[in-house]
Amino acid sequence: MIATIDDCRTYTPYGGARELWQAREEAVLFEGPAGTGKTRGLLEKGNLILMKYPGARGLIVRKTRASMTESVLVTFEEKVLPAGSPVKGNVRREHRSAYHYPNGSELVVGGLDNPDRMMSTEYDFIYIFEATEVTADDAEKLDTRLRNGVVPYQQLVFDCNPGPSLHWLNTRAHGGDVRRVLSRHTDNPMLFDQVTHEATREGERYLVRLDRLTGHRKLRLRDGIWAAAEGVIYERFDPAIHVVKRSGPWARFVAGVDYGHSHPFSCTLYGVDSDGRTHAIKNIYRTGLVEDGMVRAVRMVCSGLDIEAVVVDEAQPAFIAALRNAGFPAVGCDKTVPVLDGIVKVQTRLRVQADGRPRHTIDPSCVAHRQEYESYSWAKTREGQSKDTPEKAHDHAMDETRYVVVYLDAGVELRVTSISGGDEVEVEDEGAWEEAGVWV
Image 1 (tube, rainbow, N blue to C red):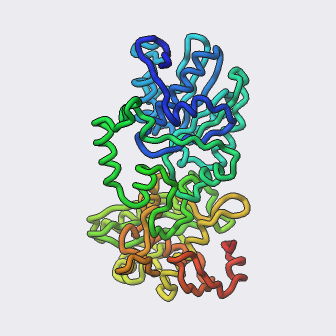
Image 2 (image 1 turned 30 degrees about the horizontal axis):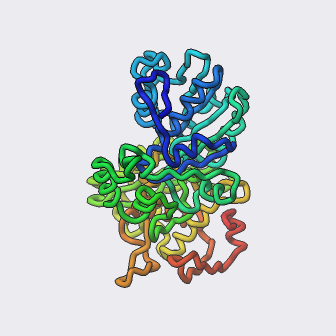
Image 3 (image 1 turned 90 degrees about the vertical axis):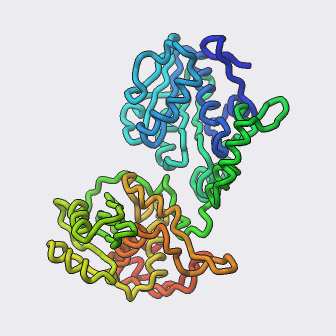
């Protein structure tokens, strides 16, 4: 049993947490399903390091600073630090920038949405929580700050539940330059008795809840397996790569609209840069709007901008006319382009290019887009096989994305034989793709 600041509260690492405590490699992936105690195990290690080495400096970080407040910092203050600890002080969690130890050590709190302060400091360790949210570029930039030299080893730890199988973290760990440490439910003494190895009553209840999950969520959160959503159409979509902040400059603005009343209405503003790359800047996604409300929503999304086109499903001629009457350059999506061709065009833009960036990204505020990318799936036959037809669900933001991409890629010809079984695509005119700047 290992004591923390006061001897009245103790913590003992088991299984993967114990292995993590012993790890000295420069980069470690600490992964496992939900509820294994990863966050606490990692915070306890950092706390012990800061107490052991006076003047040490650590950084705990997530993709956004706000996401730290009611997750990582709650665990640190309520489970790791003893009551009355001088480290806690009187600063409210939402305003916390650092924890200061009596021996001169410091634990800095940060978010990659505001990196200036934390990137100007050197550290002995950096712990990235919910690491599947960050990009490889984020991680490499943080890695350059590991040079404080007070602790005998400098270490970057990625903490996460498994994500998509092709996520860069999983790929990097397969390559061998990151040590993979597995955390399991049996490591958590709240869920499993560490003497009898039997599930506690709380553990039984928690595992039953996880057992109710389905598909890729069960694989990731119950079984700890890196897995793509079953039958998901945009398998290349990776939040760590495609969900980013961009501020332009934009050469063109185009809006996409998927008409909906009882079903969700989706309207998104897209910026197109000088290289032809697209970015979903902002989105309105609502149900229950009447036509006048939809027109107002388009006005809110396009306000103050020189919009080249508002691309709408051509099966809504009355709504297109209403937008034109309101002064918008509304056009119908070209329905001579089959749905599969449009999906391939979007898939092509999601591919990571030679410069390490894709040709299509979305702003973090476009929550509906992220959710639909991860849920938009192929319909199933009676035998359970995927058809070359999208399921009519989770497709509203996906439809208007496709409308816009088809509009922007007008003139690029594709003939699609089948893609639900593995991207078997025949390209009629590669030169057209190259000219459009989207061919890989």
